Amino acid sequence: MKLELTQPDRLYVRHMLRRIAFLLLTFSAVGSLAQPAPVTALPALEPAVKQAVLEQVEDVVTRIAFVPGVDFSKWPGFLQTHRADVDKAETDVAFARELNAVLKEFGVSHIHLSAPRAAQMRATGMRSGLGITVKKVDTGLEVTSVFPGSPAATSGLEAGDVIVEAGGKPASDTAAIRVDPGQKIDLTLKKKSGETKQVTVEAKAFSGRRPEALTWIGEDTAVLKLWTFSTGYDRKNVEALMKEIDAKAKFLVVDLRSNGGGAVVNLNHFLSMLMPNQTPIGTFISKSVADDYAKMKPATADPLTIAAWAPKKFKTNRREAVEPFTGKIAVLLNRGSASASEICAAALKESRGAAIVGSKSAGAVLASTYRQLPGGFELQYPFEDYVTIKGTRLEGHPLEPDVAVEVTDDVVQKAIDFLKKVGAVLRAA
Image (cartoon, rainbow, N blue to C red; front, side, top):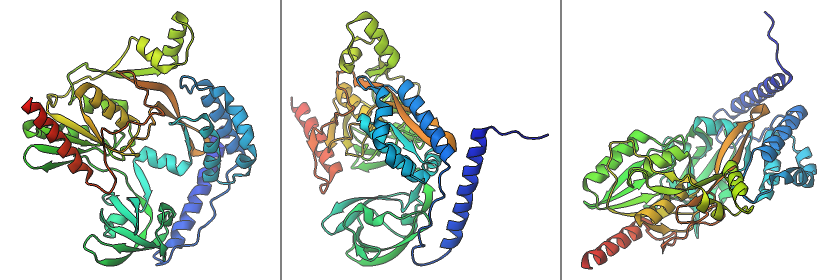
């Protein structure tokens, strides 16, 4: 029997075969060399694949994407402005970069085109690179976290280390430690002990899964770290940790720093262990909700007005055998806290009186989904806006901390001090 492939199928197969050949060449060239391998050019992107991606992006953006007040029909005009750069892009990475410059013109979050390799990593929960997060300090780049099992972890890097030099040059910004998969980089570290150490780290793929962790500060204060509400969120682990917290904690610090969000169902799962069942949290505004409002009221694109009218609210839905925590809560945020983590923090503040400690959040809160495109590309696009139950639109409006803490300070301790101070005042009253 002869297998017939459609034209899009043939383009996709041809594109993937070229990528496989490229990857085999790259990894065989890297081998065990001590120095970074020369950068090998990515295979050229088929013009037919580019055209197919452009057509599907236009279809999704102009027909399906939705944010109140945003005119997605402007896509053709935005594209025309950037057309020369889009046409010059010869690789999948360059093509995605140029199309993202076009998508950025809409001025909203959660609209992004991923190149095939990045799309595959998102789907599998894998990441690529050194496996660290850093912040700029006077002496270089301080390591703020290390992914378990990552290249950095196996090379001995720890949170608190300062990268003084990268590749023989001062580590003055994060660009100094960006290396392609398969390449190695020499790092000079100032360890927490004061020791200076030289290490060589090879950038490679690793699991992005970081388990939720519980730390006890004294006998009555728990610090719960949640890295994500996405595919790495482990419901059974969170339930077990919350049962332990319920058993003896009076104060809870929920650490959502650098939590980029994730699935609404996971967010609801967590909030339902902190609030009574069916507690209203906020309102998701879809195109159908906005259209229904327009039929009954004067037309408006104001999400706050639509949310106040919308009868259906996002509520907790407790199904777990975990009673809601009743103690005092603080939530830690930073600029890396986005989407579902911002909804979580706002809900705990508005409905549980939680204090927000740290720095501003990202202000990137739209419900979105993904569309698979030809050639392995993937388009993320928004389809709903969100307004909190007390009428705050979070998209474009970062959450402000109740207790602002400089990055150099002990944020966890500041949160604990605040909670216990508030608790003491309440007891005195």
